[in-house]
Image 1: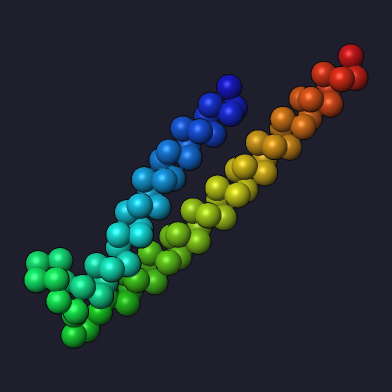
Image 2 (image 1 turned 45 degrees about the horizontal axis):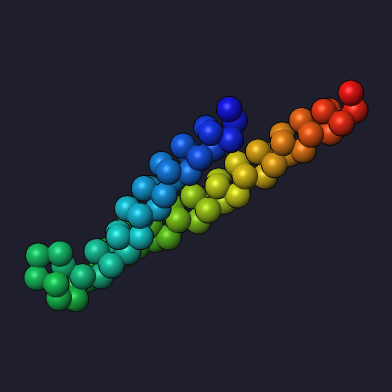
Length: 80
């Protein structure tokens, strides 16, 4: 059950990660004309970078917790 919830969360995180990755070029390129902006949106760029880092760290944390839970259950099963 926990693994299924982890997979569902990973799908949501992949969607968020996709939006964040698309935000990086939008910060430097105008979506209407496709040309470089004179003044890029640095706030959008750095927010996207920070969001990507947060998603990667959170995903790693959740994966570690899921592995710890699986190891705990496996050890408990072998003790019986």
